[in-house]
Each structure stands twice: as C-alpha cells, then as structure tokens.
Amino acid sequence: MVNPKEYYDAYNLCRNLINQEEILPNLDFESFKRYVSRENWMPIPLKYELVEKKQDITNSKRPHICIVLEKNTIAFDIFYNGTQSVKNFMNILEKESLTEKREFINVLKLLDERFSYHLLYCEKFFSAAPEWETEIEGKCENLTDEKIEQLLNKIKEVLQKREFRQSIIPNSHIASLGMAIADVTVNKNDSIAIKDALQNVIDIFKVCTKIKSFSEINKIRKEDEKQIKVRKCPDCSKVFEYNTARTICPKCIVEIEKSTIKKKDYDLLKREDKVLS
Ligand SMILES: [Zn+2]
Image (cartoon, rainbow, N blue to C red):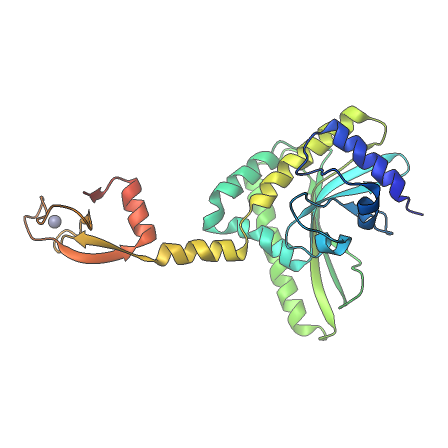
C-alpha cells in the first residue's frame, strides 16, 4: 500500500534541504495527496503551472521531477512522459536550441555513476497504462560531449522506429515513449546524500525546462524570414541602413537602391558590423 503521508514527509524533508519554492512548492496535504500514484511514484507539480491533478503533470509535454519511495530509499528523476514530450526534448537538436543544448551537455557532464538515464518504449491500448520496456539505458559517468551527441542520435533513431511502428500497428494502439534523465536512488535517512542528489536533478531540470517548444521554434523561424527594408549597392551588394544619409556606395561609387533582406541575414550582418549607416 502506498502511503501518501510518507510521501508528504519525504517531500517536506526535500523542501527543508533545498529551498527552491518554484521547483518544490509548498503544498498542503490535501492538495499533495492527489499527486501520489497508487503505483508508488509521485510527480512534483510546478508552482507556476496550474495543475488540478496528477494527469495534468504526466500528460504535459514538459518534463517533471518524479519521486519514488521504497522501504529504505528515495529516488528522483526527470521524466518525460509520452512521445510528444520526448519529441519536445529533442528540439534540443534544432539549430535554434544551440544555447540550451550547450547548457544541457554542460550540466549532464557533471553527473557521476550514481545517476543513470533510460529511454522507454511501449505499445498499448489507447487508454491502458504503459508497460515500459527499456530501449536505451546507461550510467551518467564520464559523459563527454561526444557520448552525449551519440546518445541524442540514438534517441532520434528510437523516435523514428516509433513513427514506423505507429504506422503499422492497429488504430486502437499507440506506440509511446518515456524518458528518465538523472535517475538517482539514495538512502532515505541520509540527508546529505538526498540534498546532493536532488540538487543535481534540479540543476538539470531547470535546463530541460528551457528547451524550446515547437511553437517557440516556429515563431523564431517566422521572425527570421521577415523582410527588413534596407538599401543595397547594385554592384557589390553591400547593405546600408534604410534611413542612411548616403546615396552612393563609397566603394563602387554607384547609386545605392532600395531593397529588402531576411531579418536573420540582417541580424547576422549587424552582428558583424557590416551594415553601413
Ligand atoms: Zn558597392
């Protein structure tokens, strides 16, 4: 039998060890117990995400921190539940996510053999609970940039395999993915170990929540394609501010003309100081 009170006590111990209200929000027992699964795990709701029930957390495209209590141990991980949320994580490979990818690799490299990762797969009736099978797993020790790149590529392959399976299995079934990052188990009575493990999980979680969604990436792309009014030299194609006082290209001594360029190209030229005023 899962005892929500034990989870509540463990949760409050974590809150006392790590004072981060936005990640480990203050919850009264009545609200808290709705989140404890009968299957013996608990997703932590975010303070600023309006959640009514456990499913609101687990159906989200965003990851959550999960707690699992056993007789002598407490375990944490960052969990991506469902294909959409794993796909969302994989936006880290898009060129718009270079900053987030760098940050993710840097925090992941700090982990040691206490931590592990798992990519899980299942095919099930639409409404059934998932019975996960492990596709990829490993310990987070001695991770290098290269190993993390390889891991991300492997996840991509499993996603492609899932797409294919989904296209051939009966309509009543779904092929689903789940992913746990920084899975760590420590002694329930060792406060120092709990604090250290959970702090690592939180550091990675913060980076994970920064990974851009599809709509955020599309917005950036649309913005980049926008046309900006400029003036251009017809001979050397040098770009000038639209409001420039110049009328002649100083290099070619020809008249500059009204033109437009994509915002992303304009921003790049600007950054390199190649737009003349
Ligand atoms: Zn010119």
